[in-house]
Amino acid sequence: MDDQISIIEGPPPTFEKIEAGWVMGLSESTSQYDLAVTHLRTFNGPALVERCHRAWRQQSTMYLNYRNQLGLEERAPIFAARNVETADGHMLLLWVRRDPEEMEEDPSADMDDDDTDSDVPF
Image 1 (tube, one colour):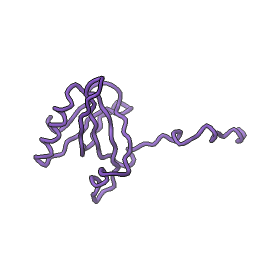
Image 2 (tube, helix red, strand yellow):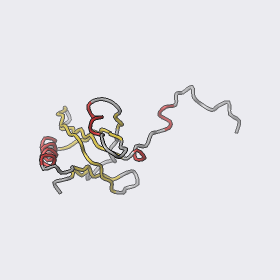
Image 3 (tube, helix red, strand yellow):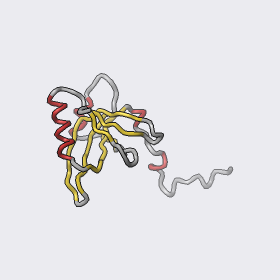
Image 4 (spheres, one colour):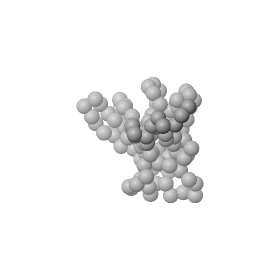
């Protein structure tokens, strides 16, 4: 149980794809993976970061366990962790590796208000 951080309540985490910066060095592999970051509120962020550091010192993989939109359990390997103290409490930033097909992109996110199909007859 020390090799995972589990989200036990709340909505599924939101993953933001990362394509540049120091994190790209973490993706060097024979397989194709995407890297993402997620922000999670937590009661004791420093203890969770320390748990990650202990696993990595033992050359073990640390995982983020969560339920997806369908309620099914998923895991993502964690490659970096940071705790940030905010006015609302601890915020845990986790950089994880995900398969490219898991990185769903919202097709409507790229559409502007001007990109409507009002000229297309139905």
